[in-house]
Length: 381
Length: 156
Image (cartoon, rainbow over all chains, first blue to last red; front, side):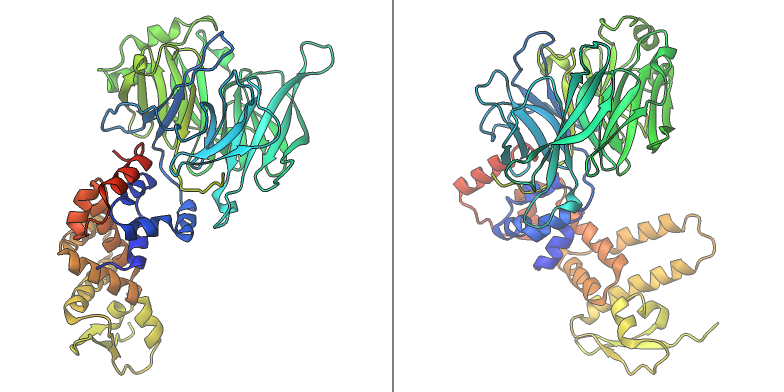
């Protein structure tokens, strides 16, 4: 029969999703899969995207919507969403971001005692971050680089971005940063000396961790980037000016190809994807392009009158017909009318995953959509 | 062309195999042990039976031959197809091959055999896996239920 070394070698070639199920096979396999050193080894390899967390938001109301759905990212089979992913946590939460298997979230509002929680849905471990109370206006980003952790501790950072006005001048605002470091222990939140002169607002406000930096999309053709280790902020110019178009395009950012930031834009001229080549020069390379007509031809069952519908959106207040929500490793989750679609940029194939009505009644306005790749990184409570 | 010497490998059941140096050196272990140019006095492999050793040599032979071909087009696909046929063996033989590949340090064979086992695991329910690998059912129904709930969302 197999010895443990062979088991570990074979297991190391399987995705985390499969490994989680293998714990049920027998006690020996359970033991091997729980071994700290083995888990640590797994953390060093890149894990494929398994799906997206989806949480609705009210457009106007102050309170949060508690339900979180999980949309599996599979091109072959359409699967229903599961809503009990975070039931292991002590309270209902709003997901803020995810990085290498860890998820950062905050207590739902209203709450007498809100917290930021970092958790791992794959092993159901979680930890509450002590210190600053979370608020609804700030943006958060989770930075977790597995190679910086060791066998027994998982080291991560959470960055909070807050907007402030410079004096009474209404037009000028700047961004300030606070950093929580899991290694720092008590008094773990630290205000960074770094500020960023940025007049835009952060939109689709989940931080994307790519190339050691946390990135957020803004509404002014710029991407806010924050180098977590060196505490330096930078504004990357987006690859293409949105003012060029007649209709208002929709964008999102995501990570792919081992740490490269990608920018996705859907406009009347089609679907375009760029990858960031040079950080400081805002140098992008176009890695994928498809006209709306081409998309329609390739996916005629799912798309109709695409150009007309996209071109109709001329005011920011009207909802986009086609909205890119999240992107990771070549897979784009987007909403097209009332359907959630998964688009693979390599094959140019689109797959209908579900109807938005399956996700709730408030899906159209700015939902939180966060890509998730599992890991077994441990977290102490 | 330098003359290629013949290496003698002896299996655990005392059967001698005569292989080309290039073929034998597919095994990093043998390469390290025998070294360059010294007279070969035969190498005993106490952990590998003749049945398995002959299969391992078959693999090494094929991969050395494929490596020599000048014309590369189509070779990779053919080699892949040959590999796929090569691993169509019973599970015990497969595990013996993994152990031999591990002991002899033949990366290609180790990758091939481990991936084959991984493919046997992928997509199966725990019950099916136990059946495939002849693993005894050890958990009580309560334990099984607890484990199932623990990982409910990821595996279906």
